Image 1 (tube, rainbow, N blue to C red):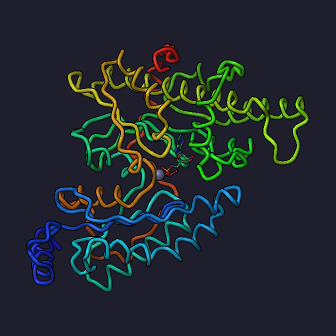
Image 2: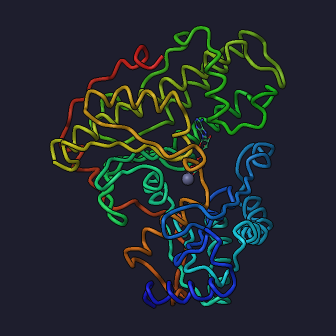
Image 3: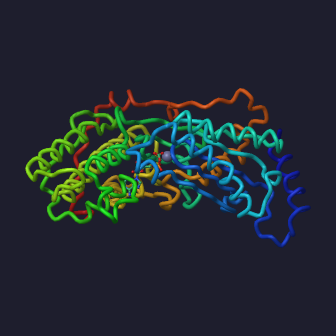
Length: 409
Ligand code: KG4
Ligand code: ZN
């Protein structure tokens, strides 16, 4: 089915049902559905990329109580929320599913049990209402959302930092990515979530409802001695753009246990140096992210991957909400001539809007619009684009450690 044809028929249906004075009236309306991890998100956007309606049900508090995401629990909650979230979004927009041009849904990568809920529901809606499906790669959506709010043309460099991913890539087009580096173990959001849990930050009333990363950032702001714990920067000797956070986690836990012993901390109590330890973890994580990003900029320059007169770095994913990390990246990027962008906070974390936006960008270019989606399946893991990771390592680029602390604070 050609998008243009569907577009016009959707317009006719829409005009019959709604008064033309309704400013939301538009030929193309994309419905986005996101359920790759622990957020049930839906949104409708129009041809211009304006948000017509959105709805987001977060499972954060349940997972905080459970001490982490239990896939079965996440799936049960997605099942409970998916229909009300879809309905709420349509109601907010004053639209019916038949007014929608296409349904964009995350199919990879993510927790299989979570992905399955959104994908199956999208297929059901598409069948019942005779709509096409646009399958979406979650990380591509994170990488492209910035274009909704900023005039960022291709190509640009992107650093995606979330609870499940950490990667550097060149975005060459809507569906063309060059992967420069990725985490060899855990993601920075996962590190923050794990250390926050072990540090018992939940027991501090103001931090009790925050996700791990936000709790660590907030606690770090109260540090009295940021240099109390000197944590090693990961992979400083390895001349590639990959990331690693496992060693950092071990170091944080080592200092935590030592201090707990020293202060004879029991049960729900926290060590008195908690803010300083959070600050040290945040600084070491930031230095690592900045160091790899600097090398990616050097690699792009050597290989002409980013135009010299228009160098942009986009930071996205939940961890991009962190102001300390974002400001450090901005400060370090000055030397390389890069301007740094990030989507607004609510678009950095998981949401249905970024899925609808990615769907719209594909719709405009007539890419991946599936009218026959019976064989469409989810993928728990899925690389972002073509890997240049070996080429980056072979280039053996020397990268200085940026002294950002003074520049940022
Ligand atoms: O992108 P996202 O919503 O979900 C994934 O795809 O993973 O990111 C969630 C992650 C969590 O690990 C959370 O702790 C982290 O983003 N996060 C932060 C901040 N806000 C959320 N990390 C650091 N600083 C923050 N302010
Ligand atoms: Zn995400």
